[in-house]
Length: 411
Image (tube, rainbow, N blue to C red):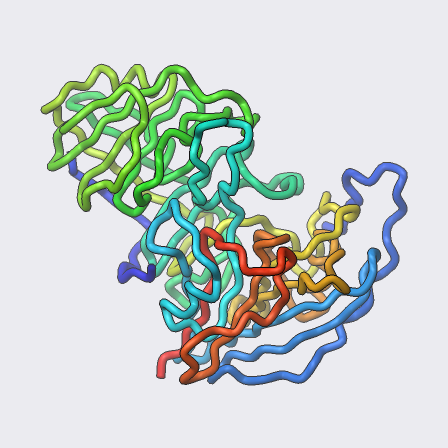
C-alpha cells in the first residue's frame, strides 16, 4: 500500500572486483554467455519501455523480460508494492492493478514456509528492509534467518535497492536503530515488524505488521533458521504511552493504530517481564542508510554487479529462473528483469550469469531479487483495466509474493 511520508525513514512512537567461481570445486569457469538478442521495444508511457530478449547461458537457452525506466522523466516514479500488511502476500498482477502501476516485478525473498517449526505459521513477511513512499515498513531479519540462495561474501540482509527522494536509484544498506525507554532505563530495540528477532532481542510490531502470528519472531537463531523456537518469551502491548497488557507468549491479530506490541526472547523477554501494566514506555526507531539521502522506496535482496563488474563469490553452478533490478546513468536509468519459466527456458541462469547479463543490457550496478516460482513481470497499458503477466511463471501460475517494485506514470 503506497503511503505519503517522504522524510528520512524515521519513526518515533511515544505510545508509550572480478567474478570468483565460489562453491564450484571440480568445475571450470563457464564459457561466455551470449549477448542478449533484443526483441521489439514497446512504450508503456513516457520514459517506460518493455521488451523481451533471448540468450544462451551455460545450461542452455534462456528468455527474459525487461522493463526500462527513465527517472529523468518527471511523470515517472517507482515505488514499493505490497498487500497492505508486512505479513501478507499477493500476486504481482493484483498489486499492480490495485495501485495502477504500468509495470512491476516481484521483489524480496520472504518467509514462505515453516516446515522446521511444526505448528508455527509462515508469515509471508519479506527478509530485508522495506520502505514505501518514504515510510519504513520493516527492518531486516538476522542473516542466518533469511530465505533464498546463499549471500555472496560480504552480503547482508540489510542490503537494499531503491530510489531516493532525489529520484536517483542506488544500492545501499538500511540498519535499524532504536530503543525502548522505560522510566530511567533504556533497552536496545533489535527488531521492527520482522518475522525473526535476534537471540536475546526485543522487537516492535505495529499495525503495519498485519494480523499474522508473532510467534515466528522467536524461532530459530541468528545463525540457524531451523533451530527450535525459544522457550523464554514475553509480549506486551503499549497503548497511549503505557503498558496496556502482557502475555507469556507472542500472540496474533490486528494491532490497533498507534499501539505497539513489544516481543522479547531470552534476555529481551526477561527485561520486558520487569514491566507492569500502567508503566510508561516510549519506543523509537529508524532505518538509517549508510549513504546520505533518504529513500522514497527501498526493497531487500543482494548486490550482484557493482561498477560494471560481477561481485566476487557469485554462484555459477546453479541455474534458476531469476528476477533482478539494475541501474545506469548515475542512477537515472532503471532496469527491471525477470526470466521466463516456460519449459524450454526453465533452466535459467546462474547468479553470476545474471550479473553479466544485466551488464550486457547496460546496467552498471545490479541487485538480485526473489526468483524461481516467484519470478513475475507484468505490464499494464494506459487505460487497461488489468495487468498482463509477460513471463510464464515456472510453477504454471502466479505465486503470491511479499512485495514488488512498481512503476507509475502521472497522467
